[in-house]
Image 1: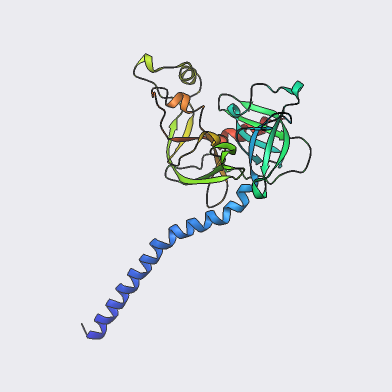
Image 2: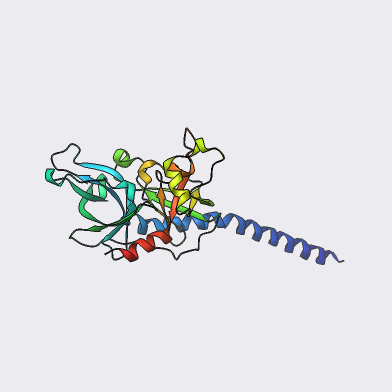
Length: 266
């Protein structure tokens, strides 16, 4: 082999190594850029859910996160986020707060139009005013383990201000919501009902969600499509019933059940 052929071989190997390095290092940067590009379209659709009473201090009491879907007048959240009753005789109202600039928010009255306790999902409708930008729901049965996700909500309620916060992670497992226990002492009423009726699957996430994140949209960071709804109470009461100190694992209800609830909403 001539010296020139040897030099050509070396140049090819160097070029291949450079291309491989660029490909490996560019992918994370591309993923980050996608999320940066997606977030401005996500945050205007994420709202705080709670109750409002003008004579109360504070007037707004935060209960969880919600997000706008459908025609821009529907709000999806967890059923457990909503109060059992509203003291309408004391001028209390069910509301959302739409975050604005400088930690300010706009209070909008809503009404409950649908809920499914077995999936801990609820849908609210805006009362009057303009519609809000809605998030797109992903098609069903497209989520895979290892898939990248992000979710946006209010992790500790209004304590950190009316600013939606985004977390990032992956779907670490797709797992049944109820798991049979080896000892009857580990059963609780919620788990018994779950095992006797409908053992559906939920998404286990490796990102940390907090109680205020209940109702937050879980979305694909590349497309912005919603694939699930964060749940921090309902799922843990069944999956982690054997634990005296619940883990920091986060869960989400698949979006297919929200599709179903919206289809039946009046």
